[in-house]
Length: 385
Ligand code: VNL
Image (cartoon, rainbow, N blue to C red; front, side, top):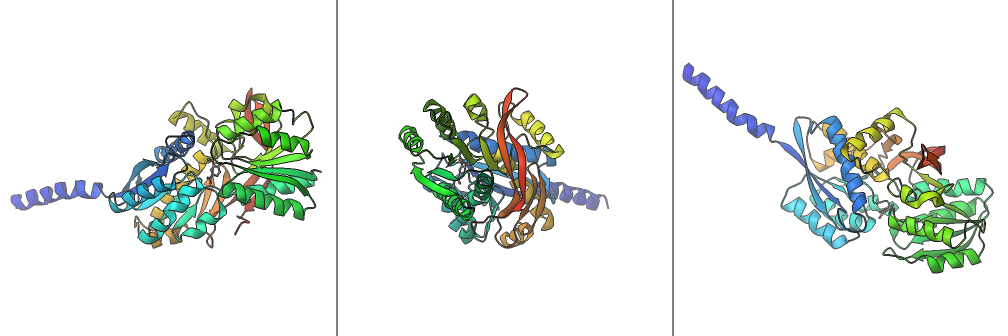
């Protein structure tokens, strides 16, 4: 009798650690060094904030993050990390992907291994079509560009020059702007694509000024490039020449807007997230974020990291902890979440995000620069599909 009790106790003692160690491994690939390092950090902070608020256990399993640095636009580095995470580390889910070329590079591996792949930034429309295991919790360039083109046409702007970064998201932005703006009666008076790596804006700015458009529409990947463009725009007197600057919110993103200084005041952009978004959920998000990282203000990438985790947690709850790729994808399709940016949904057909897009103006709030939302389009799907 005593022995059997002892044996039972012993068995329980042995079994417990084993079941407690059952985990869901998430391989997160992000730019943690190089020119986009801040953005990897933004996404990582968003992920960590969600886990801090919700705990690191879902459906009885422990969530384990394996973070890898892709160093910036480097598809071959991403591919190597994805391969190792799948084969060696045996991750259940891939996540992250700040840049389009990196997201595209990992897509075939997700398909082959049947691993869900949660996109937390990369925003070229086509990405979600590259694997049935991809779901996107960030945005697409056509999704945020079309509202900007519509707003411009409605507000009396007739002649626009476009300048975009010469890769996937830039091509998407240029194409969608042209399409929507022309359909609304606007005219494209010039267009230029600038290199993804360290563009020098001076010659382009001069050409734009000479062609006297009413506005210039730009897409540049979030970061230093927007700051450089804005500086040149003012230095070369394009603002004084009466040329308006309109853009997707990548350019005036919360991470760099303060570095732009007053030259950014009045710039109109369209995007899905601003740290100034007026909702209780966002106020809690911004406050929680400051406790994770006091040096940074959360931007659109932070919110995508946060929502990406919310989607993963939600899916695991629905599958009762099963990490089967097909079951997770089925759970993600049609999922609705309340995000700090507003209501979001994963389109069951495309696995891409459906969300509000806001029109914002750069203004000072308590002495700091913010994108203040003043108009919105509700439940916008990616028009690029
Ligand atoms: C991408 C799109 C990158 C938007 C960005 O910043 C951005 C991308 C780094 O898909 O590569 O603002």
